[in-house]
Every structure is written in C-alpha cells, then in structure tokens.
Length: 245
Image (cartoon, rainbow, N blue to C red; front, side):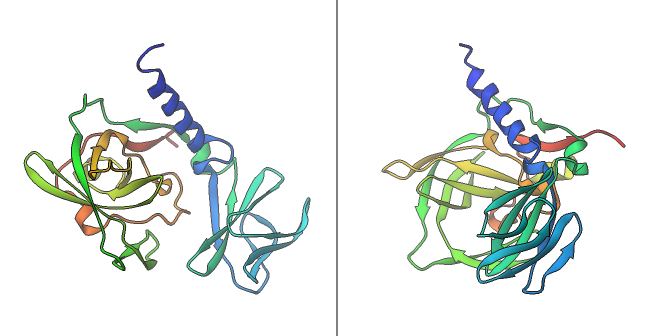
C-alpha cells in the first residue's frame, strides 16, 4: 500500500463529510425559535421550542414531531435537526439542493510543505476555574471553562495557542495573513493530546476550514486575539471552491 493511501482516504472522507446530500455544505437555514409555532422559510410545517424540545407540527410526511437537542428527522429530501446553544433552540434545515452545496466543486489546499509547518510544543493547562470568552461569527458571546495553551516557537518567535478540548483531543481556532490573499478568514486546527510530560505536536498541515466556510448558517467560534497571526501560514485547507455563475 502506498504511504499516501491513508492521506487519500482522509481527503475522501473529508470531502464526503462536506459534500454529501446532508453534509456540511447542505445547511440551508438556521431558524431560531420561541414558544410560538411559526412557519419558516424552507421548513415544512410550523415550528417552536418548548420544554427543552424543538417541536414541529403539520409536517406532510411526519405529522407532529418533538426533537431533543441535536436530534434529527427526515422529511422528504430534507434533514431537520434541533440545534441548541446557551438556552436557545433553533431548527436547522439541511437540503441537498442548497445552492452552496450544488455549486461546490472542491476544497483547495496549500501545497505540501514537507513538515515545514510542524512544530514541537508543550501544553500548559489552565488554572482551576479559569474562564475565557468565546465570540461566534454571529456576534454571540459566552464564557466557557478554559482548557489551556500550547506553547512553541515559529522561526524563533514564541507562540502560545489558546486551545479547547477534552479527553479526545484539542483544537485551536486560528487566523493568519493568508486570508488577505484569498484564503478563508480563519481555520480550525486539531492537536492530539499531550504526552505525560505535556509534549505535543502542532502541525498546521492539519488545519481545516470551519463549517461556516461552506454555509453562512453556521455559528462558528472566531479566533481569540492570541491565535491571530500577522504572518502567513500556507498549510492545510485554503478555501472552498465553487463553480462560477
């Protein structure tokens, strides 16, 4: 088996996750709800939120439904998902015929850098009770428990990335100067859990586009100030590609 086979498999899986009929790029609407049942664009029936559920009535195929947070139901060609954030509920409508999905032709990546953007770092856990403010693309802000930082050097310059995560791994939201040259304005960077001594590897070739690069209906977190770089990091995914017209 070729040494690039796992990479090709990962690329194919990523493309499937984005471009599938109900994949990332198919999100057409996010409708925020209250207790009053209403009709919403692109959503069959009438929708409201009550008693910790998203409720739909009068769906042509399903009739009445009640969805727990992040539960889904199919209705015709649509996938309907209950979304929840900080006490507020929304209905998300995934549509295979969403214009953003139909026009999507690929994901552009930066050229292979042969490890030029891979660095050894060290994880520094946050203090007990420390919190940070996370701001999302729609302006929403919330305080969350801090995870910690990853310290390393780029070209002799000390860097400290703010990361979030759990016992499965970390992630940083980053922005850099490539956004001034056609790249998407920010990206997500996964980082594996540290070793017993806190050692981690930061590989910017793993950076990938956030969901909001494929649909403006997502509410992705923005990079904190310390994760915004004045220099370019030409590694990982660059931008979503769409057919002209």
